[in-house]
Image (cartoon, rainbow, N blue to C red):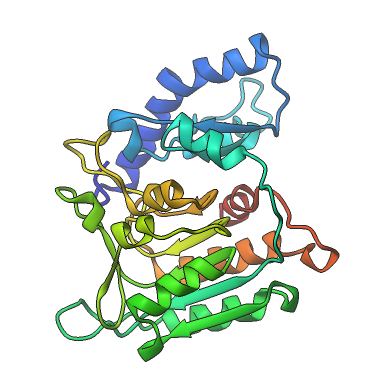
Length: 281
């Protein structure tokens, strides 16, 4: 899927994918497996499907009785993705030892000369996240000169949840060199995967193209989001396309409000991504 394609092209793609691929699957879920609506399903796309937002497939038509719009996949089920079945199995295994939640927000909006344009919205994103995360999560922020490769690695090792707002770059030929841009050196996937991350649970990647493979070899490339999963993070939020600052702020605010709504009572709400998408629509 080319991010430069028009909205009309995207609608056509989502409608075709719904009719030819997802509608038959939904039929099996509903009528054969008797899976209740609002249940959670896991999508494990391969080949060209890795670049299509399967959770967003939609009939884009009215119901037969003209009582309203026909339901789409997100209206029926809560969708999550997994890169491989083994990654899903690992992520669903119970943690042997629970630790108190801790949250780190890492932002680098001024990466330095030769590392891309400044990201002017990073500081406001970090302020928003810090405000929304309850004090019980022990939230800390790392930004500007402090957001270095070493400090980011240390923070990922010491915290259960992580939020990264920075530039991300996918390397299709050397996937382990894919990286997040810090102030001094790049924080590569190899750096992260070589570290022991015993407390890693959740990561939110507020950067462009963090869940995109290479169009010629979609099954062989480890994108940034998948790499973090392989490194130990059980749940990761990534992006298929460029992230608009205004939309990103709206998504982050809705996501955090839903996810941490019950944290004061010691619990984290489930499916915050699904609820955020429905609210954004």
